Length: 464
Image 1 (tube, helix red, strand yellow):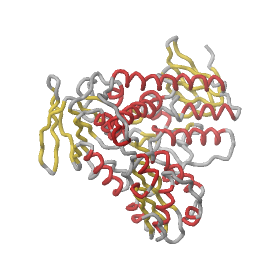
Image 2 (cartoon, helix red, strand yellow):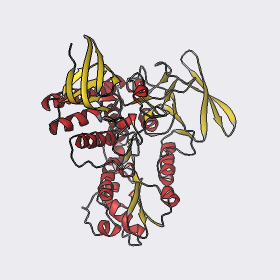
Image 3 (cartoon, one colour):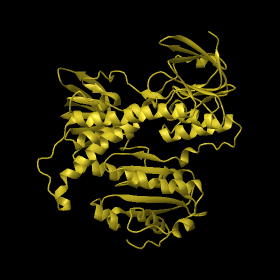
Image 4 (tube, helix red, strand yellow):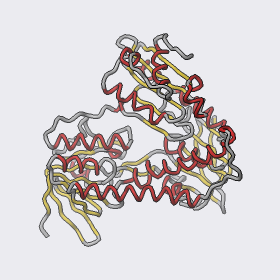
């Protein structure tokens, strides 16, 4: 069978790949996507979307338990875990089907199968019906990543879970250990803890959510502890002894090993890029700890070969992958492409309370040599937060004292994953403190706290 020729081949149909393909098609490029498993990738099928569906269920359950606080009655509240999971899978399935529709609408060809790159400009796809040969001047690698598994801590789907097992749990954990307190670990810890699991989180670094501002991490730990979680920092799980219906975890803390018993363990210790069996080494692609090395335009150094999303550099976020996909499609089509600036990409964690941030932490700004001004505003000072029954939280802003540049913003509290975009736009537009202080924020809203935090950095705060 003769090879099918395209302008662009995209390997992987996750939030980076399918968006790149659609944008390329909009620009008139004949495009094909190769996907080995699910349209929408891990994000849509096993990550961002289904986890948020689960967390929404736990959030509603949490609110029902607080009904009395709002003058309401909700007696004998409970949950059906199977129904919660079914809803989550239904949301993912609906959106996955939508991706297929979008690709078809934009006349993007789809080939389901396992791809390899035997030579520059060539892709061989092993499908259910045999092997298809594709050629294109340009290829985008968007193969994503999978959960990292540490020796001795490997998942078995029964006692020890990865995120996939945690999304379709065989049972409700009674005593749960979560290894790792990044976004994935904390989100699952929050979900299961809210539904009643006795939850312990072990973090090797000196604080939970270690990529966040230290002040926000401290507030998060306080909130999680208040909710009944056990947080173990500067700790490491050295060994898991698996028995019948139980796991004994050997946890090293301050040089001493403690033994704790659990019925379920979730391992959330990072990701590994899907770089195997693609033929990258033979092509001369450089790898750094299972991730492809690229420049700011996602070029691999091999002519016509690009890498976007989780297979490339940090931050490993779906929205970063999508933006890179658009950028590379624009670049290939000869448009004016805008490189992604990692420090201007928001990070969001959908635990209870939510955490969101963009830009430099206070410590990082100081490390980089900035003379800074820092503003803070607590949720307790905001009328909308009090009316919502969500008075716990903080908005923190970091500015360059010399220029007024917004260096970073860090939040914890209700709906901060929605609020953070205001500061993201501010950074993109190179907003100064004067612009933000002279902006009129609507009342009553949570967003007013964003204004007050800026005012506080310059000694002008009103409601505190």
